[in-house]
Every structure is written in structure tokens, then in C-alpha cells.
Image (cartoon, rainbow over all chains, first blue to last red; front, side, top):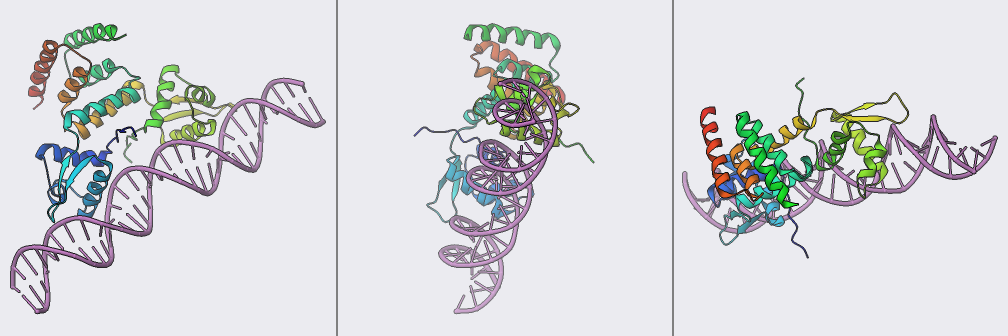
Length: 125
Length: 125
DNA sequence: AAAAAAATACGAAGGTCTTCGTTGACAATA
DNA sequence: TATTGTCAACGAAGACCTTCGTATTTTTTT
């Protein structure tokens, strides 16, 4: 009976971003932020997210209220960890360098961060 | 006729990692690295990746040779960019901080990087 | 030459994701 | 009260993903 981390899909993240920002929302509130998506689509997504345990639903009123089940940083951490595993062969350093480089961080700063991470990665082993 | 970036799935990344590391491979070589997966499963995945343009296949010999279509850094860049959009509301800074924090980077170093990124993000706007 | 092994191709099953139409309950308004 | 609007529930369709069994061809081994 291990609690398995259900990786949110892209669509689910669209919803979670709104929930993280506003704390709690009705389906309609989320729906209004979601560009094209039809109302029932948003509803269905949120219902499924509730089944999955990605969000918590208060059904005490006719209009249900949804909250994120995990806080933003926690979920982001798991997603980053997953990407590091799948795309960067487990090296967080590579991911950070990649993200920094794409952000036009000056070469000398980049080198500094790289050195720092190498020192830390060395300690882990 | 726009070239659309086909996001590799997790399974496809398992294969790409091997291809990036070795440059080019037969199905069997990849298969041997892929834990449990049956041979025909690996084959099928690679065939589909070829259709999608994720890999390039040399069919001049009976035993086909596969190469990655895009280099590692390029694909990694797109994946990180996608994650930044979907999970970090577009802020590369947040992602970097998140990844550094999970790596037990000392608080003062973290603060330094944060400041640096803020300066840069400021310039972008 | 016959048998075994290795390779590709194909199709189909079972699963998940996303979308939407429809229904039925309840609420607000004319 | 009758109509109109709002909401949750449900089911089903279509797309994609992963897996694997089977068939066919070619190569290697005996």
C-alpha cells in the first residue's frame, strides 16, 4: 500500500497552476482561466484529479471547492526530479547548467555554478 | 508545414539516453540496456520514434542502425523549457532554485544565484 | 541442406488522456 | 409557477502509448 506519486499531466498542471495561485477555486473559476477548454472538460479533469488525489474537493456546498493536495514546491520538486532522471541521466548539475545557459547567464557565472555543483556532487558519492 | 516538436515520452527518453551515449545503436544494443522490456517492444518503440522523426534509421543493412535525430542538449533544452512553462509558470529562476535546493546547495550560494537570476530576469523585460 | 537464431513488420489488446454531449438536480428569476 | 441558468455526473468517442504474440525473411550454425 505504497503511496505512489501520480505524475500530473500537462493538462492537469494547467489546472494546478491556477489552484496554487488562488488557493482554492470552483470549477467555473478555473474554467475561466483555461482559454478554449469547454466547461465540462474542465469539470471532468478536476473530477479525475480528485479521484487521483491530486486535488482535494469540498462537497459540502452544491458548488464544490477544489484545493491542491500538494503544495507547489513539492510537486515541482517531483517533476524536476523526474525530468532529471529521464532526460539528464540523473545529473541535476546538467539540468541546472542547461537552464542557466538558456537564460543568458554570463559564462563566468556559469562556470562558478558549475564548479560549485561539482563540489557538491562529489560529496554525495 | 511547421516542424512541430514531438515531445518524447518517458519510454522514448529511455531509448534516447542510450542513443545519445553511444551515438548509434542497433535495436538489440538498446534492448540489452532496457531492463525488463521485451525485444519486440523495444523494436516497436524505435520504429515509431523513427516515424515521428525522433530518430534516424539507416536501413542499408539488414540490421538497421538508429541515431538520435536531435542532439542531447537540444532535446534537453526543449524539455526543460516545457517544464518551466507547465509547472513553473514560465519562471526559469524558480526551476533553477528548486533544483539547487534539492541538491543541498548551501543557503548563501543559493542566495547568490537567486540574486544573479533576478538581475538577468529584470533585463529581459 | 536442415535447423536454429536473429531481425523486421504487423496487428491487436489494454491502458490512459482529453474532449464533449446529454441528463438530471437544484437555484434564481421573470 | 414557469422558465431559464448553473452545476455535477456519466458515458462514450478518438487519440495516443506500451506491450506482446505471430508471421516472414534472412543469416548463421550444425
